Length: 286
Image (cartoon, rainbow, N blue to C red):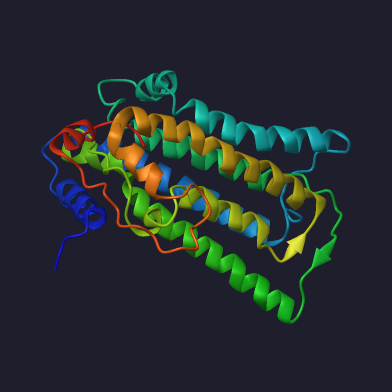
């Protein structure tokens, strides 16, 4: 049975982290930052799932109108702005310096995941609801909405796994530090949902925005802004992929559509890594 690189890389990382070389300070730093990151990640995701389920009508913010709209707009803007800037070369240098001492670069992906998680938590927990509810699903419509909403989240989880769950969750950095090895990033994703479209994470996230059972002006504002982000931001990501993977990514881009699956039968993929690809893929954030 052929091996699955998505699982093999994750298992190697976990096994290496379970047998860490000596170094109490390094291990304590890795475990502490890893725990904080995954706790914030879980809190951010739960806040997002719950807040959007209620159409952003039950969040904790209490900024008085009309300033509430400015506060909410700031909460929306801060996430994609920092999310994108930290993926630039300059952002990478900032991430490498966030943790003082010699381990900042190793922990860069964990620091990135921690920041993103805290941003999500702030956005969805501190949103100030408008108090206006346009539509609330009931009966069969509620059941259908819940199924669609749950399916969108499952799709997002599957896409994150296909992209490399160790990177998406922030585990790559702290587990690499535990094992005292350089972070080894997953190869360019072409398996699973990435065989169907090039941006399944962004598409799945957009679907979570539009399948909620409660609709308010708040939810519409959020859905419009983040859907635009989901359509435009991957263009920057693809520039990085083109620079890193060269002709291999060009072939992949020619064979696999951006966001909407083809209705016709997909042609066979020709994106197996060459030795040169493998060497280039040994490092670099995704």
